[in-house]
Length: 302
Image 1: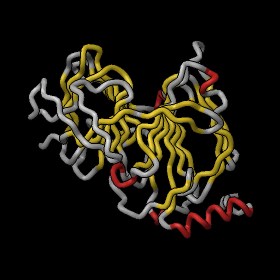
Image 2: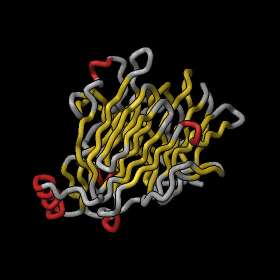
Image 3: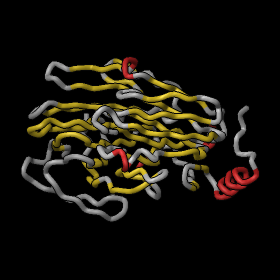
């Protein structure tokens, strides 16, 4: 089995979305080749209600899937299908926008005012861009968790890992979405199917993702898709780790342990035409979507 080397490490960048929600973006807008089939990953972690409570009012989606994973607080949601509800701590919503949907998400903090979650966008192939919208709402209790002998914990949101499957099914890119915790000082090798693009996003503790063939104490520089360089021995909070090809990754947890998302999927390798929350294959398709928004024919479902 071959260990995947690290292509590069970058830090999530602060940005503002929705009606003024302050968050950190790990990647998105203009990096489609590097992360195919994924388009964007946002970390909406905040302890100040004024920085998130305005939320994400009504907005359209077409041609993509949005995956919301809540760790603290809650997110109330509604849509043009008539669905409404709330995601609590540990819950996941996997929304296939398909032909088009109007959607809103309004976050609320926990008893201490904390709000923490992630939103990942996954592309749809051209054959499914105009499919019927659908939801998979997953409660925390439905998510499989494996705890290894050394204390390593893996929550399986989607895909198969160590003989168990996550509850989300029927996704075009056949992704694997894991929430991984490795205890302090432990070293772990985790499988990643060799045909998939793969990245990790660290949100707690720190550790090292370098190839096992690189001796400890050696710093390396890797270039990211926008020309950034970041050299570090320990990869910490809000760090994105992009992997090269191979069948496994290696992780050495730091003194506080390390928790990260490990996400992989099969590349679609199709042209991407992108306008905000609408992602199609051609500029003509984008123009049609915008025209339909303006004339009231964007929504195709009843």
